[in-house]
Amino acid sequence: MSQETRYFFNFSFFKVDPKWRWMADLAKEESAKEVENILRNSQIMYRVYSTLGLRDDAEFLLWFVSESVEKIQDVASKLYLTVFGKYINPTHVYVSSTRPSIYAKNPAGYGWLGGEEQKKYVIVYPFVKTREWYLLPLEKRKELMAEHIEVGKKYPEVTLNTTYSFGIHDEDFMLAFETDDLHKFQDLIMDLRETRVSGYVKVDTPMIVCVKKDLVPLIRSLG
Image (cartoon, rainbow, N blue to C red; front, side, top):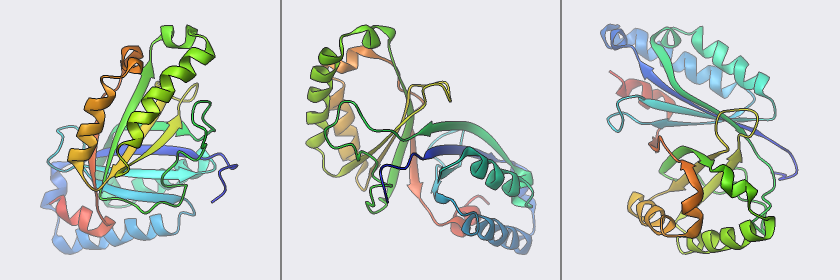
């Protein structure tokens, strides 16, 4: 996939109304297949993850990638028109876009769009740097980010999808780290806390751990 094309990322987290659990199993199964059909025919890229039991504010994630926000809106609208859609409520929604990094020599930086295989977990969180960071000279920021990037290279098991939210959402960046080993991700974050860049971090929560799941089994797991 060409890295010259700019894409929008959408991370939509949902909770399910407890009344869903009281529906007949056959009706739930039919609705799950209805939702699956909508996503498969949406003409946008998507991934599905479970957060069940890992947080109290979300039970699953739909991660969308598209060249337009309108296509993402269209899928969301169709989702809400399904039976399942009547029982879900968004709890966190984030929008961001791809763009070349001014710090990394390799502008790829997008694990998913770079063609890397999907991993078992994705950890998603909004990221905001302090105003003091942006007032530093560019060369100084590049120096600090070079140190930051070198730490990341120690953890090849962790793939980073960095996207930018400036002007289109509340944060500066959206970060989505993919890994098959949550312990390695934790080690990475602890190492990054000791870099000088860490002193310029204003917001890096909520940090949401998500587990890869196929859509129909995901909906079944919700009761």
